[in-house]
Length: 319
Image 1 (cartoon, rainbow, N blue to C red):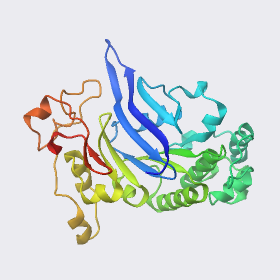
Image 2 (image 1 turned 60 degrees about the horizontal axis):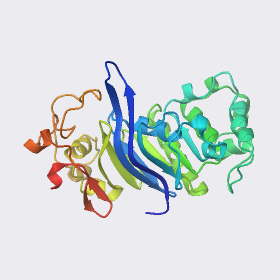
Image 3 (image 1 turned 135 degrees about the vertical axis):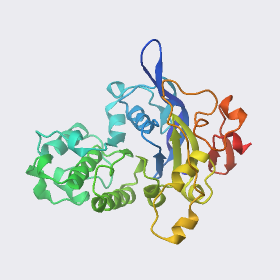
Image 4 (image 1 turned 45 degrees about the vertical axis):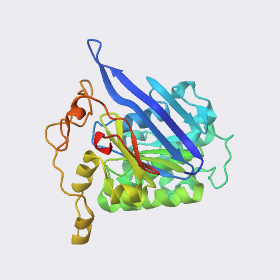
């Protein structure tokens, strides 16, 4: 891997529930993100992937564990972070309709972060609102418009421009295309890839869409009930998926040709429902839905096992 930008070790985020119970949204994960890399963090709704994003960006304080950005400890909320650190780590939310202030013009939304971070000067990053819009592929005439006057894809490009206004090196993308029409998704993703090359950005790309990760991510990590169950390089991940949950997700991806169908793992059908993060079952958290479970799966939580250089899996079958 290239130089590590973000490192998470044993990261936990638990939310108080009631009667001394906790929602274990993130329950001890290890992740590394390299300079200029895209790491895809994938999982079903409720897996904890967005909680990881909000904790890294400082919206939540971690319950336990270690978070380091370029080697520096960042395990504290955004309100206690230095202004430079806030500028270095930015997030693009799923719904630009709610993340952009409807009362502000696009010019006002972009001018505020530009003025707050005037001391940050990185080559290639614009210092004016009109140049930011041009950078993300929007006409400068949109500066005097309000978000409601733009389409969904245009609003998301404005949200990306606002994130770039602080001249970040790490951008967290929290399902940035899931609220958009399919025809618009490709435009936004292609623009994100172009910006990454131009500006040397690192992306933590959070999504439930595995087929998107095949073309976007350098590495993929799969989350289930607050834990990482498998992570690998993208090529290794799609060619040799190991964890039954990973195989289940891949086998459910729709395809348009017989060749693509042959590349998919055999159909794996899970049983039951996703357990509550308040009452996670003992042993492997996936064992209630796993068609290949063994007795040990109901008793012991598996430890990560290395299958190849950059391929790790948390499954008793790996033994």
